[in-house]
Length: 225
Ligand SMILES: [Cu+2]
Image (cartoon, protein in one colour):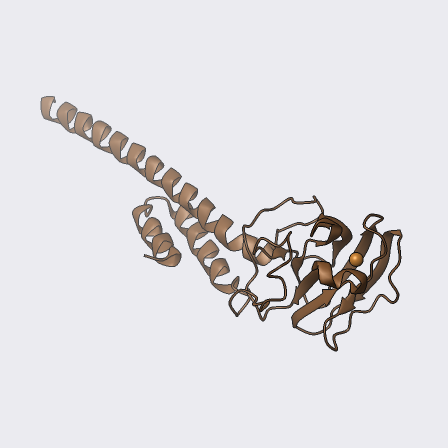
């Protein structure tokens, strides 16, 4: 039984309450139109991140945001030689800001191969030294030139070619929101439909109870008279 069938069934059970049925139908329609999510499977980084010590297989979901921050010089790979998070998923058109932590010496951000990322010479600094706005869907591997041999590497996933992590470990670093209005809306609304249907069932049960009780006593009275 999928959600829509559940909503229909719930609507039928709650038939006594016309208001609840109408609400259920409206929400079911909204849920139908709300599926604008990603199309593919999870991103495949090949072996690009396989030796990166702070990559645990999770891609941080930063979709639904105009910008996201990646730390340069995060504690990883035997020192402050990591990007944080090493894998992040953003919308097409989002800007990724690379924020130097000031630790681990001189760093830079350079695409692997002929990608668009190039912060220039490695520098020791703090703050957002470089940012890039992504205009094309895909996976963008990058690294820090002075620390490539230490596996100071990262990857950015852009657009809807790949599935977002979803759920995941939210709140790491505090800067990443995981609420996509479209994707978050779908699971929450059936939740309310369930509560609404349950409420309607309780109300109609009570209504039926009183109908039977007073109907019976009216009949009894009628019989006595
Ligand atoms: Cu570095």
